[in-house]
Length: 321
Image (cartoon, rainbow, N blue to C red):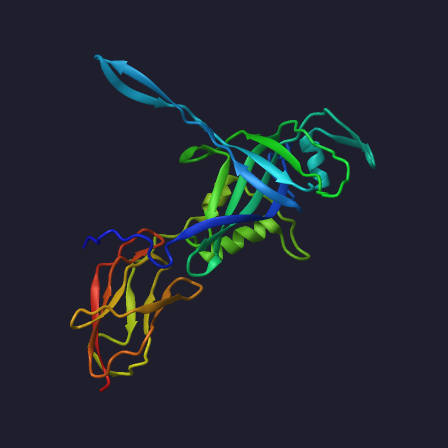
């Protein structure tokens, strides 16, 4: 059943903000791995700068035949008030003796990770986050401006331009970046990935897993078809006028367009609340139901995180007089 397009629905006005949880991983060229995570304190901005993917038109028979698309590359600008000591070799410095730094040296390849907050109009920026992973990065020489302390002091900020070399991944084009949306992936798998990235207290150090490992870890088994159970039950009677409607799905839900209305077709305003797993939706009427009245819950527009669509169905219940 097709649904009419609706704009600016509650909970669907999303936005992205902030940057935190920066981590540096210097490449071990002998093992071709990123073995140790170092916290990147003072990180202020990461600006993604993809390039390439330009079109080259080809013509035949006096018309455009097709467009050839160039390879896409990933670059970024990193800005921070400071950087880990281990980044010095990535920025062309070598420390032959403590506290002495030699410039214009070979620059090491590194990877890094950071998070951005993901919000919506219902819960603000606590809705979720996006985890960004970057591979094969190299920093270009960058300027640093040192200014006299004055009546408007400010901390010196560090900025560097980053280019990347993509890594091969079986079944996909080579890539240098992965973005993971916490609101859509399996929470247990995301937690397992973050243990790898950040390490554990008194346990293993954090490391940056290669793209193939990330894809393998985050891939979920074939999902079961999406289904729902409801409270009140269909055809229930004597339902309390101050009752909530609780819909429990077997899979995490990505979107829905569920409505509640009286049998006469008058829509009932309800608040929406999801549990942390994204499977239980509580519909809380803004005012009590009318007594001795039949209400219809239309379960429509339900799509789970696997892209599966639940067929539209209705539930009827009657309230106590």
